Length: 311
Image (tube, rainbow, N blue to C red; front, side):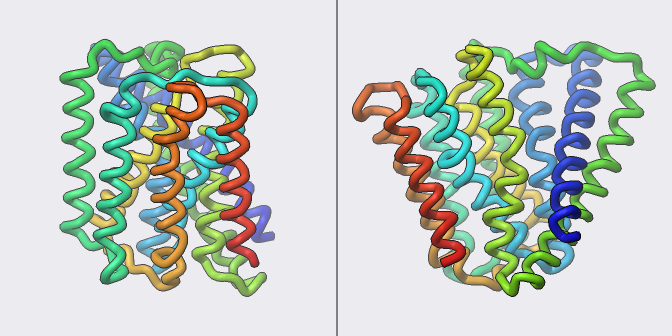
């Protein structure tokens, strides 16, 4: 039953997040907000809602290891699993913004998270405020200096809907996210107890991979359609949002207190290492391109990380 709860929870989270996303974009278009602004703000927040809901609820119910493990695991999965599979299927070109803004911001966010929790094992309110404030500064910078950025494909696909549809999607999406988070957390905690393993391991593997499925599906579909719009920047942006928005907002609502210190002695170092590795992979052996060799390296690293969890 725990596995059923987890699967149903993830399905509801994905559907609920998608419905909320459509409603939010439609409302934004109705207000004549520029598409580039919608793509960088509304879409980014909406696609991080499943992780946010799961992390806030986990922390409030004293399952902080699931909350933190979900974010750290998602960040590792985005670069190791999702990017690895994507570039195995098709070589992608990397934009200059990768080493000018995207990668440095991701590393700053990751290192800041480490500094905040490594010494006392808790992420408190003022640290959450700092993280979230950095996100606002980053978004303002992007909007001011990168206005030539490509408009998010999601925004292009969604049109203004009748008001009653937007309201209905908001309500149904919100209920879906709430119900999904309930089922996912109950299933994850139940599975941890059934198999006598820590909540941290369930959070950093099962829950984090589950919440990364939308990114994986979107990336693979884009590659199969031969749409080159899929970029490393999208996945790095997701990692930045996971730390600055998800953990930032969660710790503002309630402190995130680590109980399984494997998160701090092992997992967070894996996140930092794979984030750091992305830089040299972009220059060797082929400059500003990621292909099969890099994909194999990233996938092997991710498989090693997961196997290490259970050995």
